[in-house]
Length: 381
Image (tube, rainbow, N blue to C red; front, side):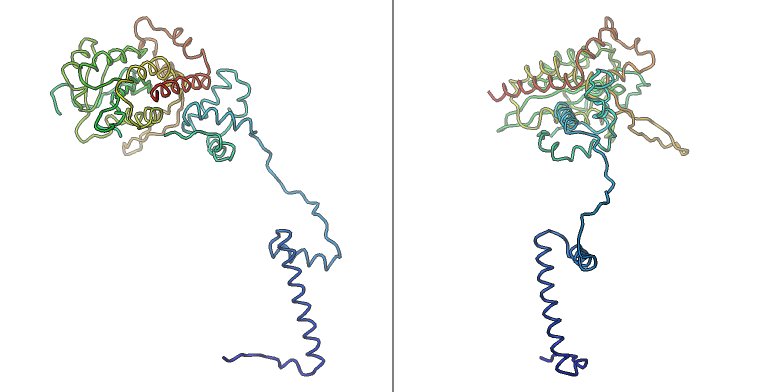
């Protein structure tokens, strides 16, 4: 192996001695520098700067300059309230959560929510990333979609009025070939008013009574009943029921997957989110249905915000939706033009106000979660 060494600058024994002294000093300084880095945690660049300063001034002083820093706006107590809100409502979107925080302070006079009521939607997600939030928040654990000449194939035109409901079924899984309970989900197209029910089977015998009860839970008149082409809804029994109630029946068009998209979205965002995907025996349909009617449906419509679109049209006529409005379905119903005329006979906004404002959004959500827990505990037994 060939080694290239340039020692032409060393021309005397004295120079060689001086070179060896300097080399030993450099090695010693390197050891001291590494020691400082190991003991202080400074980076090599920081250590070098401090050594240079020590050699130049003879001393090292703590820096008197103060860095700019942001004040803490949201306290651990605020994060804890956000955790409680998200746990109670099963963690909604940032926009819906913001609406709840505002309502807690402004509508229900909860002074402790004053700071959170001013939070931006983006910062809600920032707080959700904090260790305090992630350590206390809860994590929650297949919907399946015959052709009979019942119901017209078309997408209903609601003309901005409530009463045009979309309907779908959600199956709660099989276990060893045994069918689970079925959830019936109904959503009004304009207000997103949602009514859920539960039934052992989706045959005509079981559905007739349940459908009539679910329809009666809407506070406004039902004009149209729209479903996909499943035989559970497209049959003579359901047709006779709707005819008796003077409700028009339509069904989704072939190849138009968006015709029933609203209720299918709610299947996942609401029913699956709260009831999960695990098998639940059909014999539990009655207690689940009772929970829906007494606690879950009021929660969905009076205390759980939904997002609504603003529709605009471009110069070429293309329609664009921006979901920039967030409110609970009840407030959406009240905001409609001539909303009073849409209410069913015997229903007034004074009666509905008493239901809507008896408890705050978080108080009612906590009650709903408590009752849901009781239902699931009974299922385990």
